[in-house]
Image (cartoon, rainbow, N blue to C red):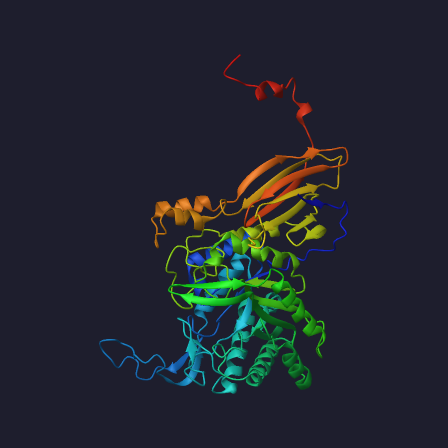
Length: 519
């Protein structure tokens, strides 16, 4: 029996709700899809998400730029357009129509942009190097003057459409993972040059706009010191630092799927603290740190993302990763097309919501944490209890599978700080048998594209199991006993109760409790 003794007033510090400020998504063009917007609405409503990291804003679909003169387009009477997508000449035109539709809709939902300024518009790219299904061009600009003009033009357009007051709430992050060859076909020194031109263009619109980087893949090395040293030595503005990390140790690709071994549950909290320390040792200390991507693995073909294990594994990160100012889970939705469109109902996609709006266990884990308060009453490696402003004591417990243990089942006794106030305990449970739509899909035969009837069955099975519990009273305390099975995540809401039973005239509850077919 593991005992959690909750302190009356809380002496465990504060729990920063940094885990639900920002959410990641596939490239921004996917927000033109009704399903993606629905999933963002769910994340805002249920998880409290405030920002969407707008990935791939300038390249791919929608592509921001085209040629003013389409050249040979229209000369082919059968097609009516040139088969060379890069055809054209003359001035570069910026096309805002689709981006406006997306940002308008985000703001209507209640989500603001965390703007990722990238990738390179194809007609500004210095090479044809691209990746992903939607053609993200990843080279430096062929002309930094054209790049600067584009960003200045975009900022002026947004100022006219959304206004300075709104845009001061946004973030502007320059590029995505420039330390990886695939995402930046040049050097980090060249990235620093791109950053300098970009921040100058953004600040030309208003000096108060928040700009940052280096948006590195930072599992091993985040290049934060090099970036901040450059900014310090060249007097280049920087308002925040961004980086990414995933916790996969090893990976193997077999057929359709990737198979990973993940690091210990403390890996991500420790890595984010190291990034925080790197900032504070730099020439520009005390800057905010935003983790604009993280997850357990880096593959969109890794079934871990669909399973209760992912929720139980990442719960410790959500509980303990307090160093960053925000953590952006990658990603909100399985509407995602980096390599292929989804090949099956559950295929290992990054999303915490599948293509048919079915929440995965990780989604519920985030929902549980979003219901916590700020004042910490108790924190262990596998639990976090807080007090909310409404007086509720609310906690989350988790039990990730660990083959080194003799038994996976774990028993808890939760002792309350107040022996006089009556409580009712409400629990919501996710584990292998509860709120696990992947298991239901498996039991229904793993059909890649199931019938609408089966989709409804999956949706039904995806809801956490709710129970209300009587607490046991001893001479010294009230307590609640819980058993967590393998890969369980449990929300515990201890609700203070005021008993009004005495207000009912001649209520004989015992009569109903003893109803029987026999007299």
